[in-house]
Amino acid sequence: MFNELVFIDGTPSSSEPYLGGDPYLPTAIAWPKGSEGGPLLHLATFPAAFINKYTNFNLDSQLVISIFTPYSKTSDAYIETIMTEGGKVIAYKPSVLQMGAYADPITPSKKITVFENPNEDSNENGIAKIGGIPAWIQDDENLKTLDYALQINSSRLNKAAPYHKGILVGGIGYLMLKKNIPCQDIDAGKFLIQTS
Image (tube, rainbow, N blue to C red; front, side):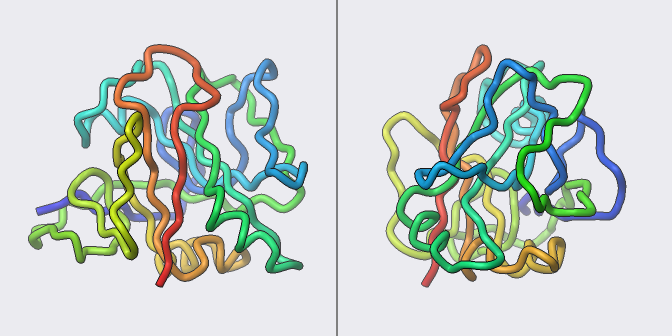
């Protein structure tokens, strides 16, 4: 059995995991920028309590974890950036209002829920899931200070965000996090993309 991530219609709040839209970033945190200097796309936000529930992480339950990634609809230049640098991951206490700095966010946003899939998990199971066994497309990623939390596959993401296809370049995105995050951290982890 494994915990499959499913994207469903509905307007999420800051206390739920969600795909797209804008994050509830506090004004004290600057919107993450890529190496080219432009704002990154907000991909998803997961409450720390949600991650703790389905994994062995010990994150402050008042925090949320937001993933930001390079992306462009008009140029393929983001592909090299996302493959070499990955996306940025921030842990913070959410504000009451959403902040928007990316001109074309994923809309409408989607709620992210968990389906207890009765099938056996394996390192070949490339579906979107939280916890379980990572399905590395290339070499296993061994980042000394970060551990695997969840993965999102390209086909499911393309269906959920049809106007933002190609974010994961046909592969899988892996959220890697520090095992213990006790407070706000603008370098809480990394979002890695692997493709064949």
